[in-house]
Image (cartoon, rainbow over all chains, first blue to last red; front, side, top):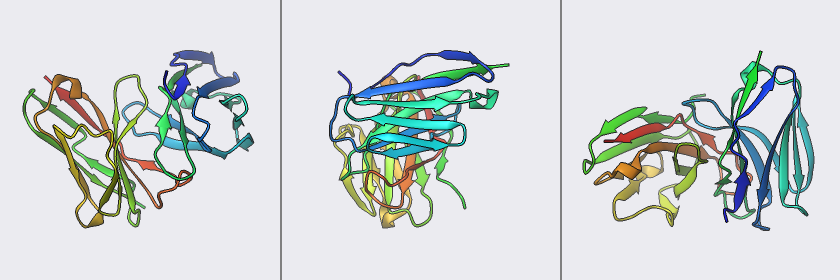
Length: 111
Length: 115
């Protein structure tokens, strides 16, 4: 079993829809939770970062962490065609910066 | 501010040939990472440097892969000899510090095809 599980999709939604992306994990030592966005033939770029359980909002994006369930989510409101990309969840312990990534979910937002 | 620079962007080689990838991190970033990303997968750490020291190379296949970070700035990742299964994207990233909450900035990657 992988430490981090993520549905690979692909996920196709119409413009303006609310998107929900999820990851589950098994390592209780993870304290930092991140979402990266990766456009085709580009490197991943950090989208959202959260520490421990709770919600964090940034514009149209909301990151949610539930440590008791070992479950994290990313919500995208009013999705735009420019949001079409692969979304990777990533996690790290407190002591080391090694990131453990999910497989990524490919999102397509259609007009 | 310039981001992480990698070269070449694309490389096609025949199996058993050597290949090298180069990375220039963001200025001032002490920690440098090399990741391997297979198609449809997330990046996996190969090696992490803190300044010149390789502090985590447990996932680096040392029989054919080697890396160096001379003077604690640029880094080179080498494969010799390359195998068909090495076809992937090799990503370099850097961060200011070495803790889990230090943001990692990724380069565009080198896409390697081994034929």
